[in-house]
Length: 443
Image (cartoon, rainbow, N blue to C red; front, side, top):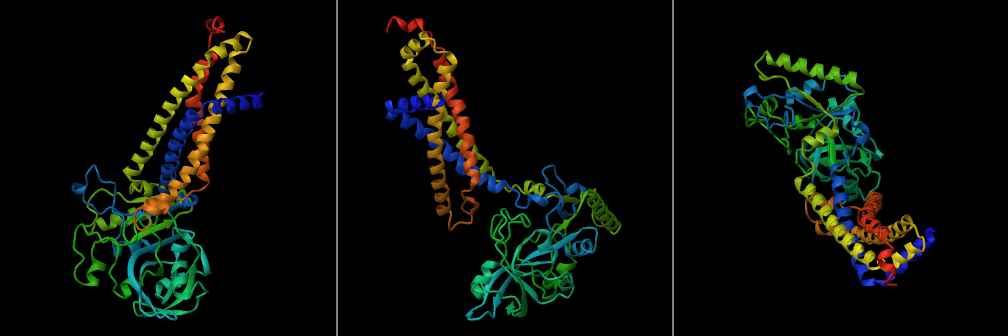
């Protein structure tokens, strides 16, 4: 019976090629717009390290006074000052913890290198690589002892290693970073979390930019007196003109993350943080109510409004377009089905059941929507490619995230089912309710 209905549907579509093409094109256009916007929206809203969402926490302290807080505040600032960060780092409650800041550096001394190569550099601790599951192509991260020295070691990204050493294993080789000799201990494999969840301050290449191309132990920043290239937020005092004044100031410039294995570890570490800030209150700091927080990755992404209102609006507009296309398809299908009402009246008089008439026309709508979905999928792939080309030289996130993946097939399948039910159900239902007596005389 299904084969019969499919043959009938195909013959019906061929009898009205222009109308059929119009409906297929409308459905395809609406579905392609949804595929493009949903693919980008999903990539922007996704948690790139979801499997650790309940164990990774961004650490923030609230140094605002009570009268300085407003209802619109999202919470404490992202960055810690040097004094607070280094103290919290001494706790061994977390399984791993890391401090980090963004620096500007210049790399020289590679074979055949003519001039120094400027690179964004992340000064961090060894826990960074274990916490965030950073993959390595060659070598590995430095150890905890190298954090204390600090040892002159450096980790390069795969991209940087390709430029400097042609992609060969460079572990053990030496190069100059800001005119200081460093030894390469590791080269990353491809690692490009989107969004760049571990640093959402917008510094460097932005929330959806590439990770840094070089990583060195965190203590090299104060050792070499290198000012941060990222966010430097001072609420109560200026950083001063000297590096020593920066270290002693309340200016925030260090991000901290901790990996806490379970809820008990989280409670213990938060109690440790609260005890520290309560002690600092006795010295005149942290004058307001304590609002220290441990943010999961998903909470961190939401708090930073990673998904812009523009992206949400584009998704809404795409679905509005699909809705308009489906409404037009409903009208066209209804007109087409009711035009064949005399024939349907005869079939009903010959004891064809309403369910059979309904099923035949619903399958015709399904064939129509399937063809429209296939066209929408093809247009969606082309649309994503067009977005990549349009934003190829832009810092906007759309170009980086507009990549077709199997999720696009699921969007197309789901939208095809929805389109069939929305566009085909009512016209097929009306066709099944044709009264035979009204058309028998005319036949």
